[in-house]
Image (cartoon, rainbow over all chains, first blue to last red; front, side, top):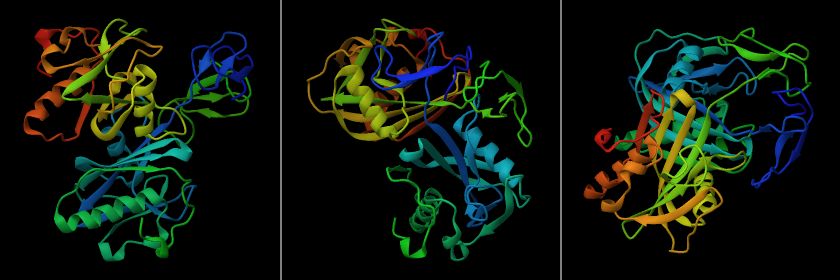
Length: 189
Length: 189
């Protein structure tokens, strides 16, 4: 950040009075520009025991598989964000959302919420940011080709929890930078 | 937002190509300025069955009682944010955090996470944004003088759940603007 988005003047980076961490402060109008973590919301959609995954058509991790998820927008709830992302990325409708994983991705300042959800029907297809949408049985999950560690975590939790039929919410802090690649050898979380 | 914080030029407000909602876009460098919901994290600290509350020394709702909570910062987890806010507002240390309420405050584009927590000791005092810190037994909770509906919800859930000794996470969407005042007559959620 180089300029104030209120008045267009240059900003400095220092600790405001009464604060304890540096912020961008306008040299002209003294507006303080706070930058805070972003929320990512998504779904783990289930249909007759199979999980819906999307192959990414955009960077990062183009060509790898993920759950439908994306940035929460102003003026919506976390559940509505998860439902909207599922509709946008997979043209799919979901219901019975239950909060399943809450992950703090500390190095990238994101909070990711994944909901377990029932996929309503088989009417789905690739959205603009998706190359392909597919339902996977457990034995067909492309573990080597998953886009993100958080997605792998959610899938692993789901298949573990399914044995008992109980799906407790998982709360995870990831303090290390996200891994670029996910190896099969790497499966224990 | 009037100016680009990257190059200082004027911005326009329109739907970017491939997007479906208006954003502030720089007329010069085409940078797209996304604005997303903020996360608020806090604690419901318990000590021998009593709850720690803070009387606010700042607006909004100055002079009203609240739980220690505030904006999550970049580079921290949600739990660390809740712990830090408790330390900053009440000079108090907490442990054994359990996620208890997840509230989407849709009209103000905030997501609030409140953790049940054990207050470690009686060494607490008012921080800079707090006028007074006090432990309250259930019968002494100042229901008429609570700052926010979300705080009242968390306290009501806690005292209800305590009867059974089970504290399930509550997921709430508040679609209407936050109430400025909290009346006793208004107690049913």
